[in-house]
Image 1 (cartoon, rainbow, N blue to C red):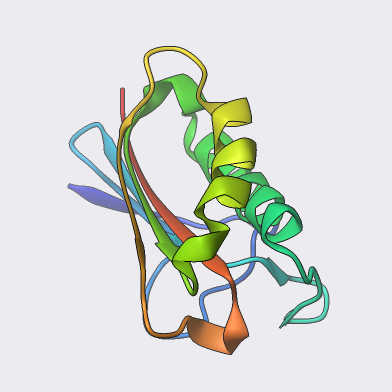
Image 2: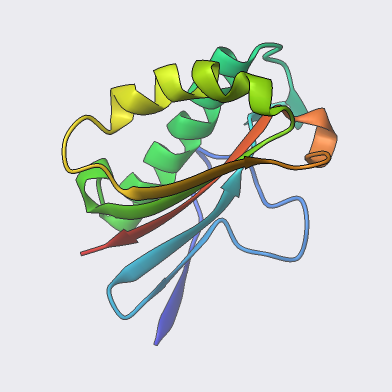
Length: 125
C-alpha cells in the first residue's frame, strides 16, 4: 500500500508528482529544489544557501512522514555545475556525520527554475 506525503513546510510539486510517497516502510522523497514556497521562486543565490534550503524541505517531509535523517539510506544530488560539489558537501556533512547514507552526486545540464542543486532522498524505517 502506498501513502502520499505532503507538507505545507516544503514547496508544492511543480509538476505531476508528489513531494513524497511511502510504501512498505520506505519513504521516497522527490528531488527538493531550493524554492521559497511562499513566493514559488528560488531566492538563495549561492550553493550553500540553496543546499541548506533543500535540506530544510527534506527535513520537513521526513518529519511529516515520521522519519528522521537517521532513517535515510540513499541520497541523489543533482548539481547544475560540478564545481559546486565542495560547497554542497560542506552543508551535506552537517546532516550526515555518522552511518551516512549511500550517495550519488553529479552534474546535469540544467535544473528546473535555474536551481544550483536538487536533492532526492530515500529513507527506511
